[in-house]
Image (cartoon, rainbow, N blue to C red):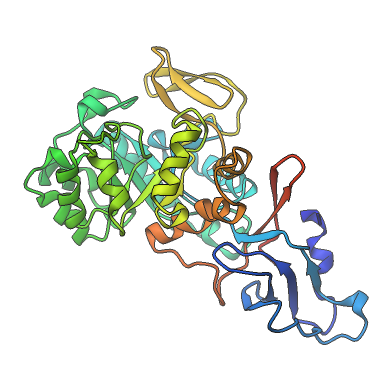
Length: 413
């Protein structure tokens, strides 16, 4: 495979304005394709190889062509992580204005881990902490040093995911019970404060508000409602979906199991064509057999998207780390509280893609789409289309070992 460091040598040197990537497999597309990347680093052409060969880009000497043959490897946009709680030792619920440098470091780290966009996730904590973190993220996003043209090689913050505090106490998992709040309209407005436009997703237990008025309000604000940490019945979940809820947070975790007479929240989500379900593919949160059942029932990336659910030790070695007022221990990328409660992972998003292929649970293209295509669908981000900035990943499958690897191919600057 062509190393990332060599990409710039493939760019046009004089007179040419394009880079052609040929013989690429694309998630969601059939057959091999070629892509043309223009001088501005945007996708200019997507065409099947069998219908039209890429024209030679304005040079006669083939050795000088701006051409990259990926030889049947997969090419995709970068990953989108809709649930990530922190990284490099910083937990997003603990954010302060003094953390700008660390936030910038996290954005660069996540880009190196193959992530284009992420949603900092604020787990249940005090309203004061939530407001402080939201204020910090708002200031950071609007800081020209972060959003300026010199920061192309950084993952972008696509909004905030509030995972709580409107969760069912009996399914709170590792969330601290003392900060859970009743799901009422005054409480929702208090938590959002002046930052409703910053919040992209909110995870809540719909059974806490039988009237549904809070869901109506959140839906009117354009916030994606995700059901989770919940004891909702299938009927309660369906009522929430009918009010605009469109996601489920980490399927199977913090909710009742599917029973043949009581399908519950997850059962209702699987059969609903407009609902997307998050999945942690670390092999600890959900067993590989159960993951395969969920993928098959949900038509793979059409109904499921991968999340990391990574905690602040992401990027750090295994060990013991502080987590709010408690402590977690990380062993082989799995984080647990001292009482054994599963708290999350410290594995990057794309590890889930590699796991699904290694375990033989789905085809390579579907696995890649679960982290790059379906999460974009879930929150309305652009797909791999003409005009899209070409922040691309190249994926290679070693069939002898069933090992999937990836590398960065952009952005082209």
